[in-house]
Image (cartoon, rainbow, N blue to C red; front, side, top):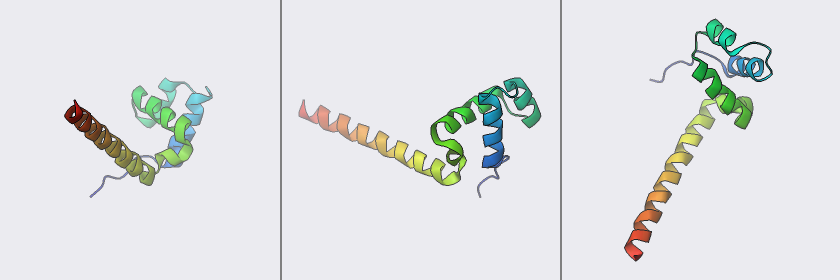
Length: 85
């Protein structure tokens, strides 16, 4: 059973907008939402790269799958390169 998200994508988006545009301080946002400063920084990085779609579960799953594929391909390349030498 998956855990319930504490915040909706729209709530994360608003927090990111407030943080990025300087409408509220990082400390103020984190205190209100009971999150760490590293969490808002992580959300902001995701938001800057993918927009609100970055907070969707489907995208998270796809990113994890693509990361695993990349690691697998790198490992295959290293093994093949090692066999040739």
